[in-house]
Every structure is written in C-alpha cells, then in structure tokens.
Image (cartoon, rainbow over all chains, first blue to last red; front, side, top):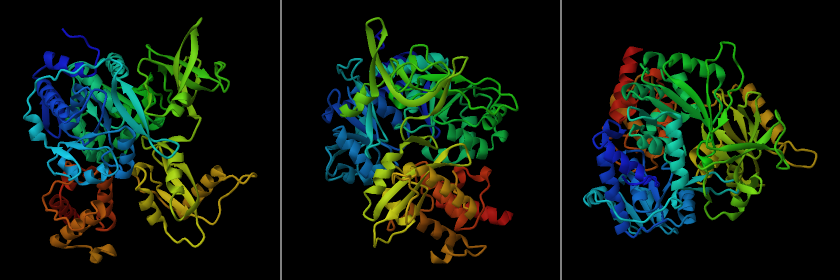
Length: 534
Length: 96
C-alpha cells in the first residue's frame, strides 16, 4: 500500500477501497470514486500536456459542478497547486490574483468563457481547460478532449511541503492576499477533522461553501479521506432556503458544515418543520456568532444532530471546537468557540506578548500542523503573521497571530471578544473594511470616505459607507455602488452609501466612525428604512 | 418594459410577463441586452444567473411584478427558467 503523505493520495486510496461508491454528487448526478480518480488523472494529463509544471498555480474558475471535485484533485495530480477564483467576483479583482501568483493555466467551463479574454488581458494567463469557445488570447481545450486522454496516473514527483492550494482573501491594503497551504497542512487538517467528527464511509457531507472559502476543504478533503459521499450544493440553493432544506432531506445528509448565516436562513425561511432531517447527525457552523435563542430553536427542530461551533482563520484551517450542550430555555449568553484542537497549542498574549492573566483578554496565537506556509509574495505580512516563541527551554517554534481577541472561561473554553484590526464578517464573508475604503477612496468623485458596519436583524452585520464628494462632483448612491462593485466582491459592496457634507470628527479631526455609525443607525430607524435581507 | 416598471397592472398576460422577465434578466442580471434567452433555458443550476442574481430575480418578481412570494415558495422549481417563473406567477394569481 502506498503511503499517505499528499492530498492527492486521499483520492487514490478511496478509489482503491471504495471504487463503486458515490463519491461526489451534484444536482442528481454522481461520480463514483473510481470515476472521480479516472477523470482527475485525465485532467492532470491534460494540464501536463499544456505545460503545467510542479509547483505552478492553476486557477479554478467554475460554477459548482462535478468538475469542481475533478479539478481540485486533477491539479494536484499534475503536481500543481489550485487557486479557486470566485466565479461571482468582478474580473478586475480576479486579474489581481492571476497576475499576483503568476497563473498561466485556468480550469473553467463554457458558461464562464465570456470573461476569459478580460482575465487574460495583461496577465500571464495563456491556457484555458474546459471550454471550446476559443478565446484568441488563450489555448483552449474542452472537457471531452480532456476526458479522452484516459485515466492513467501521471508520474510527477511532489512532496509533502509542496504547495497544494492558494486562497485569496480580503487584504487591508486594498488588494487581496494569497494564503499558501501545503500538502502537509491540508492533509493534517483532513486527518484531524475526519477523526474529530468521526467521518465514516456511511456519511453524506454537505458542500455548501464555494471553493474559494476554506470551509470547502473539509467537504473535499476530510469526507473523501474516509470514503464518504460529498453532496455539492449548487450556488443558487444558498439563496433558496426552502430548496436547501429539501435537498438536505432528499440527499439524507448526515454532516452539515456552513457559515452561521446559512443556518439562520434555513431557520427563518427554510420551512424546516415540514422536512425530515433525521439523517443529520452533526451540524458544524462557524464564521460568526449564533444567537443562542436561534441556535436552541435549530437544535429543537433537528434533535438527531449534535451541534458544534468551530473556529479558525483560513490561515490555520480550523483550530478550535465547542460541542454545544443542551441550552436551557433562559440561556442567553454567547456561545464559546471552545478548546484548541488536541494537536495544537493556543496562547492568549497581551500587547507585550506576555501570556494574559487568567480571565483577561488577549490575542490568540496558535501553533498547529494545519498552519499555512505564508502569504504569497508578501514578506511584510508574513513578518507580522508569524511569531517565534520558546515553547520549552531553548526549543522555539512558530505561532500564527490570529488577530482575534479572546478570553478564557474558568472551564477553559475560549470566548471571542473582537478583532485587533478592522477585519469583519458579513453574512459569513470575511472582509477587511480598509479594502472597501480603498476601493471607494480611489473613485474619481470621492473626496473622503468612511466604511463601518451595522448589525442586521439576523445576527450578522452589514457594511455601510458614507462619502463626501469632491467639490463640483455630482453622482448618486446607485452609481457609486455599481462603480465600486468593479473593484471588490459583491458581498463587500456597502448596502448603503450616504452622501454627506461632512463627517462627525474627533478632537484631532479624525473621522469619528463610532458617531457616524450611531448617526446612521438612528437615521435608519427614524426613516423606518428596512434593508432587504437574504 | 416601461409598462411594468412603474405601477404594474394587477393581472398581466403570460407573454407580457415573460418579456418583462427576459428583459430584466438579460439587461439587469446578465448585462447582455442583445442575448437571445429562451423560455426554457436553465437559469440557476447552469450558473447563468448567480446566487446574488437569484435574490435580485426574486426581488424583481415581488417589487416590480407585484407578486408576494412566501418562503415555502422560494424554491428552485419556481425560478429555474422564464417558463417556470411565469407558470408559478399565474398559479399565484389564480390562487389570490
């Protein structure tokens, strides 16, 4: 038996052990493990034939489909690292990532072909796999030609510390940053999470997250590691809660993993009481706090499922869990994020990097085998993110600074207390408010701007902005919104942009964002304005 | 479809509704006003209309076509093509 030291070995092993079992499903179609491996091998052969070399970054630019699964493993089998590109993101933002990591190849589908010329303009992109629509700028190869190459495993040397995937996330300087994970960090995560949640070959996992979200690694790494079936949920279902709950019922999902927002939407609009969800044995949520009243309601509607709050920046995959106990009726405290994984060490540090006294707030730093290698080509960020510290005696090791402020309860559970910087979560998406501000600030009509968040009515927050226009400039909110949407992903575009003559200021003349925020909340209440949910 | 942009008449015939939907989808969601979009063309599962587009489509039905869509009706079967939406709308109008 071959060893298990690369993420691609997950599929090889399960194709040996469970060749005829459904491995991935999408919209009623399925691939067995044997079919999945054959297709991934064919894609790897195609990529190699198109010049992909070990360690290269290959883009995934696809709406969800069975090809999502094929592509991840096909890229690994070619010795390369995958870079998931948000199919809903504006091309200008994707071009940054393509140029930043020197991407020459992209795997896509005909439905996304219209954007390829733009993605290739001014970037190193030279080849598109998965579409026939010949772009004059790219060599193209459709899926049927890929699959005609057959399923022989290409022979490529790859080792554990090689790059496995790069995920781009919001960056505070106005451009995204690429998190680099290795086969080692990814496989450590797959093994530990599969053990922690007891994943077996009789499990049926949800894949709710898009590929460019780190949560998708559980669905595509940990499930296949144990021979489970992963059910890929079409993007549109994420906005159709009643269809989503029916899918959970009909696909007899046993493990659900998503951002909190998705579960709140299911609770509010998913008609859960009319669905049979008794196959669900574990619900994992994370990304944002769950209101205890809503969480209790969910637990009552799905009594078969254990519920766990999981936490971890994408830089370290997951690193804590809290198995939620039965919640008493009058319980209204926040839910802890729990304990650091058994294979990891977490410390709370004060501003001088000393361990915070018990019960005091400190920044969580983590030492874990699931930690990323670093940010692509950003020595400045790496210098800040990683922190060397003696562990025992003269032995020192690297910790990742999460930027998350926490407090430890008397029973050892960690509680989230806020951020050190201006990173926020909106409906499950991680956004640097500075990136949104930068996008507004470069607009030709904007003189000054401020971006801030306001709680929505469903336990999350929404991004708002206020701007002062340049003298003589005339534009309106709708135009500003559509123009800023070219630079940032749709979820980061402010839901409202107030045009103002001046901002509230602090004594030193700085923008008083807190006052601005309160002013906006009051205005909304007075006007009786409601924000369209969903 | 200026006819429907303002105050929509309470009942509209099938062809008008389909044209309004087609116009909204091609110009507002896909930004391809010259596209020939068929009545049976798969909108959601194909990824042609993305998830944020799905929300805008439902909002369009509610605010511009003036049809309230209860949560249990926000399902893929009712929104997957122009024909599917039109059929759902006529079913809703007959029910109310």
